[in-house]
Every structure is written in C-alpha cells, then in structure tokens.
Length: 434
Image 1 (cartoon, rainbow, N blue to C red):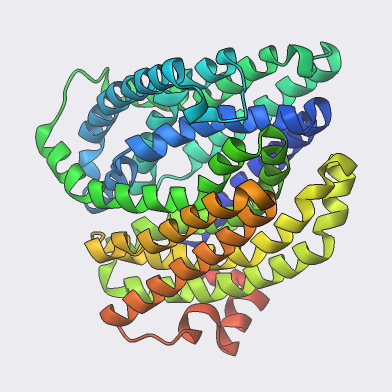
Image 2 (cartoon, helix red, strand yellow):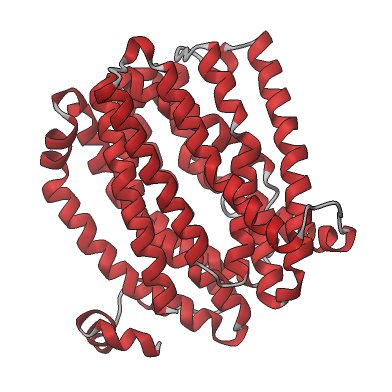
C-alpha cells in the first residue's frame, strides 16, 4: 500500500513539476490572456468528462477490485462508451457554440479555432479516465503513472521549442494550442494500444458488465459531477462575467492549490481499491490515512502561506500579483476538500449510498448562487471566498453522514495520536508494514 502511494505520488509530483514549468512558460510567453485561453481549452474537455463519464472509471475500479477477470470486457465497454459519448458531446457543444456562443464563453471569447480544437480532445479524456479505472482496479499503478509523466515532459519540451526556438507568442498562439491538445490526447492513445495488444480490438460489448457498471457508476457519476461543479464552477462564472484576464489570475491560484492536492489524489487513488477489496478494515484504514495526511497537509499549507507570494512573483512575475490573495483564501478551503475526499472514498467503497451522493448538493447550490451574485462585482476574491464556504459546508455534511454509519470523533479524522506520528512520520520506513 505504501509503495503504491509512494510511486504514484513520486511520478505525479514529477509530472506536477513539469506541468508547473509549462504553466510558467505559458504565463510568461502569453500573459494572463494567453493563460486564460489555455485554461478554457482544457476546461471544455473537462466539462464533457465530468458530465459524460457516468462513473464508468470508478465503476471499473470497483468491479475489477472484486474480480480481475472482468478486465477484458471492461476495456471493450469503455472503448465504445468513450467513442459514443465523446462524439455526442462534441456535437452538442459545437451546436451550442454555433447558435449561442456567449452562453458558453461569455466575455471570454477564445476564438472559434481554439474552441473547436478543445472539442477534439473530448473522446480521449473520456478514454483516459475509463482506462485508468481499469489499471487502478487491478492495483497496477506504474504503467499509467509513467505515461502521465511522459506526456507532461513532452508538453514542457515542446513548449520550450515553440516559444524559444520558433518565437511563438500571443499573436501566433494557435500552434501552441494545437500541440497542447495533442498532448492532452496522448495518454488515451497509448492506453488504447496497450489494451488492444493484450485483448484485441474491442468488437464486443458486454451488456451484463454494462448493467453492473451503471448500477454503481450512476451514483459515482452524480457525486463526481457535483464535486466537479463545486470545485470548478467559479472558473466558468469568472470567464462569463469578468473575462480571460481574471481567469488567468485565478487559475494560477487554483493551480497552486491543485499542486497541494496532488498528494491527496495520489493517496485516494490507491486507497479506494484497497478498502473496496478489504471491506472489514475499510473505515479504520480510511481514518488512519486521513489523520496522517491531515497533519502533513497542515504543514504544507503553513509553508504555502509563508512562501506562496515570493514563489509566484519569482516564477510568474508581477503581472500575476493579483493571484496571491485568492491563493491565501483557497488554502484552508483545500484542507476541507482533502479530508472530504477521504470520507467520500469510504462511502464509495460501500457502493455509494444515495445519501453520500446528495450531500454534495447543498455546497454546490450555495457556491453557484453566491458566485452569480458576487463575482460580477468582486471577481476573483468572491470566487475564492465562495469556494471556501462551499468546501467547508461539504466537509461538515460528510462528517455528519459518517456519524450515521459509525460514531466517529472529529479528532479520529484529522488529528493523529503521538504513536502514529512517531510511526508513520518520524519513522516513515515502518509505513511498509501498514
């Protein structure tokens, strides 16, 4: 368990470094407006993924954790589902943009060419999500993590050549966007080839696997969709009401926090199949992991408060000075979000009861209403404050729901006892026995 977390985090940490380097290049070469264009190009495939995946990636993990023999048929179903749903969203979004472009981009007009390029990546981001669920269910973390790292390295190297050797700037940004979209699609292409070599081209579609997938997946889908909307609705409203420059500033603060959440996503990725496979120890394992991570996260957030401003100014320059205050507001929000994710993984291992899905809804409603009211007037500060409120409320509701399943003190979730601090932080090598 510890080795899988270590490898996943290490590879994703390196990937995050190259992503950060790419972000620095983009920010310095293209400015806040160019950074906003890149953000929105990535936003629409992410939007289609979070509306269209129907929980198939998590369902693949859930089913394969219980029976590894389902891998081949899960791959076949994932291929056809990704293809069909991907093209569906490409057509729907293209039609909306054709007849009512402001409903999608508002004041942040990124250009038709950039919008249609972003649609090209939609089937590929769906496939990437579905196939990673298969790898995680089999608890095979090395291959797909290495592919993610490889794609981030290629993105950075390509941007260096485009910006410094071919003098690409905001006036001819199209070439950089094309390269960016191709790199978004690369992991899914490699995963597809990997499975095709193992199982052959997916000519089949298994209805029984589909039924089981949908039974779990629809609840996972709704929970992930609501979580995504809580997490990213502020970017949409910022672009709609305030434009690309503020999206560029805010996305830098969000990206800084996403780097912190890299540790959390690495742990939850390994945690979910582990507690699904070992149901009896699921809650004990979840709480133990949550406590230890909570302490580490607290230290990281304090470090970010102390050094976030000089790091941003050093790496991105004075033009991103407006990113600093929203970053300071988002840091405690990220803490709530991280602990909520551990509790959500535990509920998912129990088959995602409907209550664990619907408790995301109040945080979303509050977040969206406040975004609509305050973002037009206060911009990125309002976006950060509404996120803090939404994440905090979502954590409280998850904690209350846990009490119905098993009475648990808040300290069992966020504060490790001294013996755990000594065992897992001061002497981390003993984590191997965990």
